[in-house]
Length: 238
Image (cartoon, rainbow, N blue to C red; front, side, top):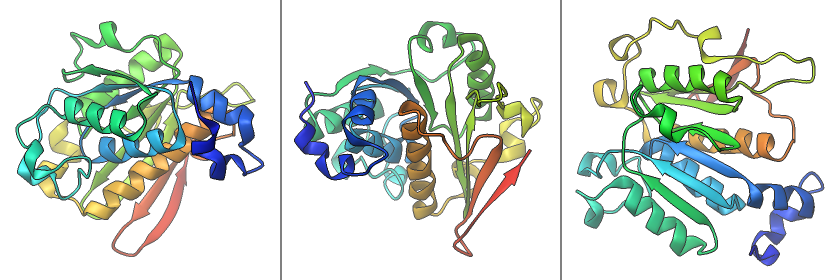
């Protein structure tokens, strides 16, 4: 059962109050990828009071993760990321329901895992996983929050969220379905600045909470972009 005292400061905001806080507590979300973006996403969701969180990742903690994956410590190296993250959640708020899927998202297993959620959050650096989520979001009528961070730059958008005019937008509205990992790069291939990862993760959380609380997300039909070198934010609209 949720203790409202824990969230009293954010509940003072007129847009939130008890009604939205209860919506967040009743929400069930899936975090796909428990790396850099996923670490920040998890911290943000837990802090805000999202009550049911499923973590999906088949990877283990590595030493070169630690500069940007702030859920983990040196003593966690070699352990499954979902296990460490689940332990962190339960230590922070033991009332949150946590489930773990220690697999990567693939075309072979996606049908087994994506149904039954109010929202998905993308913490991957795998373009094929993003394309799969985009495809299945339409089939399952589930909104999802895209995120990407590489070098000094990051992007966030809200996909498959239906606006009041009935229109929704997809990942493939911005990016070609022919993309592959070598075309778009990754943290592993090209590096990333750690604070960019956290900024993008927090923006994903903000949009997720707006979707879950019916608070009108900002990044629908446009891509929020963060330039970490210049410390500038801008949006690209369809």
